[in-house]
Image (cartoon, rainbow, N blue to C red; front, side):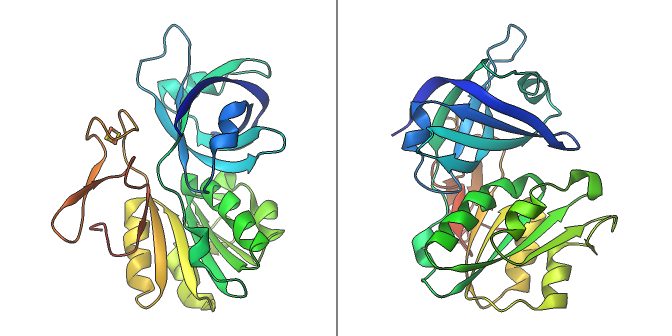
Length: 255
Ligand code: FES
């Protein structure tokens, strides 16, 4: 059930260029069920514009009643958010959307997880859940440059991990699809989150496997009421990324 809560900051740190990891505590974390869901954040400062910011959930800890989110600072709202200190409160609406279907990967099978930039964080909770289920995970994580890389060790602790940077300053050089064609990982199913061009290239590069894609779209309300996030579907209709997604099976959204 969607809730709204003033959640308290328990940790907040910068983990890469312009990238921050924020841990919040509160009842709302108990409602988070699926990896790939997101929250809508409003920074309650006087200068904050009224619109919320959608931010994906990177890790859920029900026992501690906490969750982690990783975001890129840059706009007015996220810059203000980056100033929040331990003990401050953040206005959170969530959990929102339909996340990654973990149950689609069978125990004993292998899943390929492909993330680009700020699309990497939701794959971390997904990788944890899949491993708990007995699914082996292989991770291909793309970043712009070495300074933008985060969570490499955390993903490595869960499975084989390939890092790729667009400028070649760290790991493989190029795009996530370049690494996939070079190392030819063997897997049964794939999950991905990242910018639209990356998802499109990935769908083409993996023509024959079951897959689920999480879309990053501009949002207004985040709850299916404003139509700011609609995308075209292959059957000539449309879907709302916030309420119908953000995760869709491959082939549903026009890429
Ligand atoms: Fe308003 Fe999706 S953001 S309908």
